[in-house]
Image 1 (cartoon, rainbow, N blue to C red):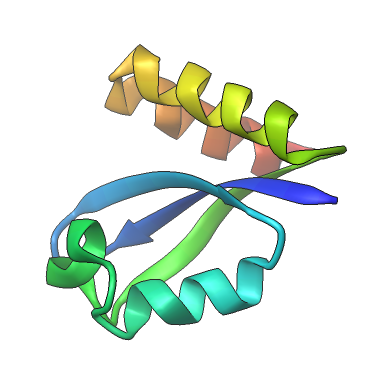
Image 2 (cartoon, rainbow, N blue to C red; image 1 turned 45 degrees about the horizontal axis):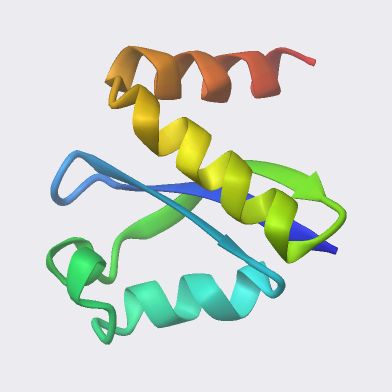
Length: 85
């Protein structure tokens, strides 16, 4: 099982989109300041959205699909709709 995730940093007011097979470990890594792309937001990253998928290939495809939208509005709609259920 893999996860596509969106994390948010209130420190930088930014979102980060990624995929992993271990969400808890990956979040710790982002908050440890070891990931250059999320270093500035650490240690304030929090998971705000997840999707569960069957394999790594599917996760990477979905991650790319979300990233290609390049829209904060789209990201916020994903988050809002996941909370509404």
